Amino acid sequence: MITVIIAGGSGTRLWPLSTSDYPKHLLKLTGERTLLQSAFDRAKEVGDTVYVVTEAGHAHHVKDQLDQLPEENFLIEPGRRGTGNCIVFALDIISRRHDRDEPIAFVHSDHNIRDVEGYARSLNLAADASSKSNKVTLIGIEPTFPSVGFGYIERDAEVGETDAFAIQSFKEKPDFETAKGYVHAGNYLWNCGYFVGSVNTFLSEIQRVSPTLQASFDTLSGVDEPLGQVYNEAYLSLADLVIDYELAEKSDNLAVVPATFDWMDIGSFKDLHEANESDEAGNFFKGKAIYDDELQNVYIQNEEEKPVVVIGLDNIVVINTPNGILVARKDLSQKVKDAVAKIKNDQAK
Image 1 (cartoon, rainbow, N blue to C red):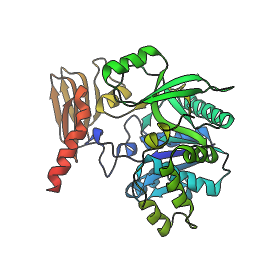
Image 2: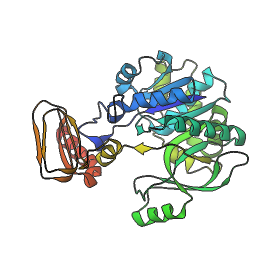
Image 3: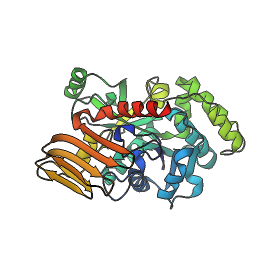
């Protein structure tokens, strides 16, 4: 089985830790390994062959962190063209190098997962289901609360002699009341964005439902010499395409395997706090020169030598780095992205 790690994105909701030059998957957020390195460690438990797709601007950082991965297994996008083209890019390269019936798992680099054995088992179950049913197969996460930040998969009947279910529909990020209904219904799963199938399975479905993705594949596969200048120019000519819109939502022939592992998409400081062990007061501190008094449910990280003093606060995140300082209510930390956009706008003036 082949695993492709998608290592892109900017992670602006975790500013000033994560920046456009050094996004969150390159950071040590939950331990001694970065999110990217942890994703690579998990991928090696799934199968022997691992590829990483990343954008040219971050490629040198990605290679530094995964120095044991062969050079030819880094697939460098000359520019971002969306998750749809990212997957098509990998499918083209893999189709030139491997058996087109070998299963491929597309996973993300910025998720926090502790149960590596369960992770590998779930992906291999998805690969088996895809091979038996000739369906692109997703991984769905059992929802633990009515999240408005995730997409949902409505599962249907079981697929033959497999551990997968047919997919009835996809639901985009719902409002809170709708999300509560999904959780109570019991047949909805969070969509974590993992896709499993062989080159032939993916291309069969792409040809059936997505002329735009098919055109992207035809453009890339029509270049004799992959990964060279002509290939890069061809890639940059592609429109920005998102795999969820171009394949998942258009197809009526997909399957989903419910995950048997823990999963967290660290998309905010609230998530980051929950992913780390707190003290009895619910506080988590990282870094030097942190001085606290009468705090509850607080996340503090100091990346500099200067003292950071926080007194008498609750439900707060405090981040000090050379890139900037953030002080926010944890339940409003999703608004960090808006603040970063304002900063970029002011800096561009």
